[in-house]
Amino acid sequence: MQPLARRAATLGLACTALIGLTAGAGTQAFAAGAPAPTHPNTATACPPLDPTALRAALRYRYRTFDEIIQSTLRPAHRPWPGPHFAPGTKQEYNSLGFRIAGKLIEQTTGRSFRDEVTERVLTPLHLEQTSVPEDDPTMPRPCLHGYLTDSHGENVDVSEQGGDPSNMISTPADLDRFLTALLQGRLLPAAQQQELFTLPKDGRGKPVPFVNGTSCNKLACFGAGLMSVQLPDGQLLWGKTGHDLGYANGMFASRDLSVRAVYSVSNLSLDFAAPAPLANRLLTAVLDPAAATG
Image (tube, rainbow, N blue to C red):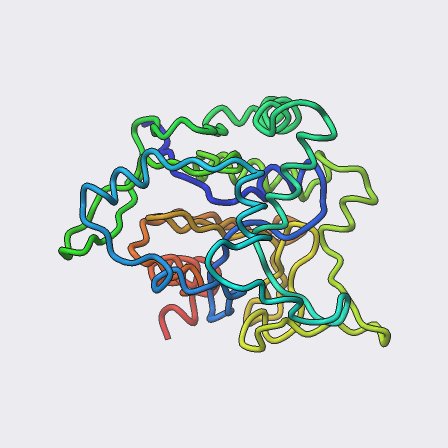
């Protein structure tokens, strides 16, 4: 049986292994009620589209790193909000950081993000079901289909869509191989490896607050590319979640790899800050059976 491909909206998969600089792409709540970093409410930012316009927008809209960075730093139809807090005093999640990291990779190496990821990560780890499609909207078959609801209340297949240079297509098995190799120290030098698990701290050595007090248990939970999640029994997991239109994905493991979990589910919600209920139920059943049955 062939593995099901699915879209992974997580630039962190590759950037984590190339340069441990910032937190990765879209996140969601993970198992046992752990809250997720918040994002702008895309449900209100993206008005309902008719089916034809929705398919066209998904299939043909592709933005380069430069376009994403410039449109974020210089928004066209709204004022620049300014700093949210003084540097070093709090932590806030924003996927723009990894787009900037992707641009830095291209400027530093003189090669495309796809070429660097393929040569440094995908090929050495034999991740044969993982690719960086760039502006190719097609999905390999078989695949997990993603859906969104259009203005008529009908579910529209959004499995094939445009995106940006950071978009990746993968399978749960490949994500498990990647995270295993990363946590085993096979991809980064020791100093960079430690940055994955280093949380920002204040002058007293305590983790700084997370800017949204309801997320990350109110304290910083992101290292350089990975987020931490504490299970009810106190065990700490590290990994990454990711959303794309129609999809919700995640991969987590303990540092000794005694606990590992990967999921990929279809997700109708445009609110990327909201948890995917099915993913939460699956992970709770695997990682905390008592909570799932109780």
